[in-house]
Image (tube, rainbow, N blue to C red; front, side, top):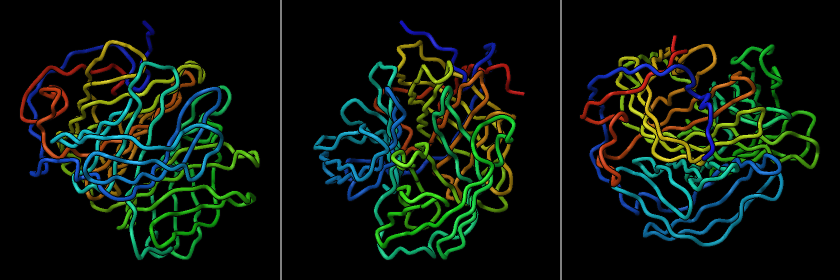
Length: 373
């Protein structure tokens, strides 16, 4: 069995016990929550790091088709498949598990088969009547890529002017800790159905993605490998205002993609995650791709008024103003890096049993890692 240092939350295990009560939507999810057309960004490991934009067409009754719209290299495959959505929103399809949001506007899904080459997708539902104006303001833009010899993750503050111009400045980590560029700029374009492109200054092949109907969330993947550009996967969350600890309160499914050991080992995770609205995030692993023992742990966090989530100097992220989605990144763990996405559950009645440690009305013992300062 493969082992891992689990550098997302690595350290000495300390046990902390408590009882938490999390707020949840009231309506149970069904297959009909996943209905219509979605645009999904994907990242996957293999002989090289590959990113793709995939179109999903879901019939609301358990059948879907995938169509590859753009890729940095050969990776994902299209075709027909089936899916199911549990009452709490957990989404399952062949070899993958994740969660669809209570309103059906987003989903995140990871591969779950034991493999050193996992993949993860985040999807935004197709919209109508969209334009560049919908994508206006400041966004926390979390980026993940693989650059020889290690995984890289960072947070940019991206400013979109509503007229098709984007500038992004690296704010975490500092330039001395990563080979990510200090700044990114270019032109973006949002089509009527929410699909977007972003052409970086100096390049000609546009990156591909999609924007949510309210302009709050976007997914973007770099597919310009043919012109020497590094493939990347990113999720942007529009910055809020006046946000506080109490805003991060709920029971989520959280999917994560981790590279470690200088980019030679990759792991995908599907977990329960519960935020108590008072600064504690509890994690319980449900599935991984490394065949490792599943563990639980808890973290302390703070929330900035703009929605930035801060765990420590190496782990940060953002919470959407609607509170249904959060994104975390981690970096500088002996050349390890991760990106994870959490989506609020529809109910707290999962088919796989009590999500002890992941939220709900129950209590439990949560494993806390040293390094949570």
